[in-house]
Image (cartoon, rainbow, N blue to C red; front, side, top):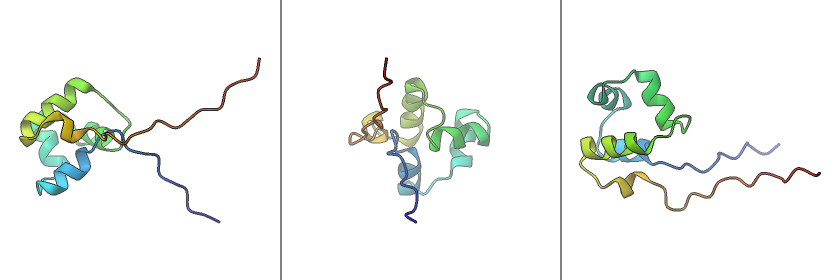
Length: 81
């Protein structure tokens, strides 16, 4: 049985936090949001372009560094009529 393949990530917040040696909890405090909300952002369950701009400013990176340019959404099968 093959392991379940992870869907491609749209944002790179987790990776950039690791590069900056910062935690999700630290960023959540800076943003004034709960740790659960921050986790939802990092796990791709909550996406907000406005929030990505805030995160980029706090981390001192361009917003383009937080976006995975290689992201391709999963293709959903077409429903038959």
